[in-house]
Length: 65
Image (cartoon, rainbow, N blue to C red):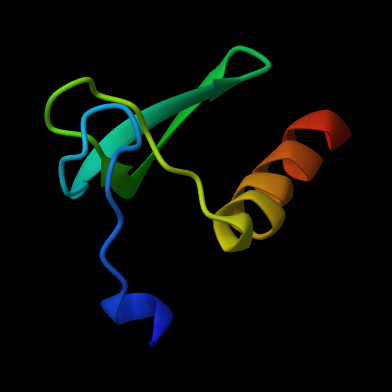
């Protein structure tokens, strides 16, 4: 199955995750990104791709300042 077509479910609520904008804070700075979120409990799913890609990039930029 293609990663883009994968359906993720919340382990706690067993509800299908919905793509929503979430705010992340690191070193006093905030950035927004659309991520899968449980519509019931609000837990956010961070994919390995996002963690090692965009988030790692932002982390490096913030630490270099």
